[in-house]
Length: 256
Image (cartoon, rainbow, N blue to C red; front, top):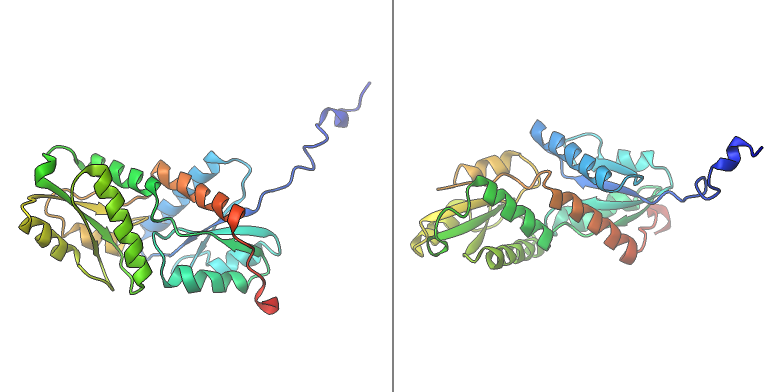
């Protein structure tokens, strides 16, 4: 009679564990942000069972990214920024934290711009009531956090262009800080162009101070942040796969 162990497929015990996906969130004092990020991680795990998924923050919330990487030891990981454009955190903070860790890491591109973000933005606008007015009188302000990095502004402008093409109306990017135009200024510009129905698309990954402040300037409807929209989980996995296919591992700081 064959032993019980022989019933286990010989390859099952030798199946390699894929590199971990480490979601890198900014961090926020708003407790809704952390609960949203954790729910988004659950969506990622549901889409790809067996993939180790972890969370690390740049600041303000635990676990901080260096602590998450320290817990991984010298294993492999792909750091996927939960950030919508290039900027200081993507170009400096995350790579430096990765290089200082023992873990063998790759850093993925930020989430935007990408058509999946446009899917999520359109869906959030529809939930808020978009589509009830003629396109000839409608427009959108794409409200983002803002950055002094010109690449960040270019990335946001590209998303605005993609959203405008999708909706068939003007879409102006605007910023909560560090860049112009502000949301009120963008609203005034669109109103002067004869667009009385101006919706606000919330280009934020989770609820927080900037998302709340920009919503107050919405003259008509205001969409919710991107949050746990299914397209967000799909995009996180896309960036993970993309990094594995293209990016070399970040060397340890001591050997760099």
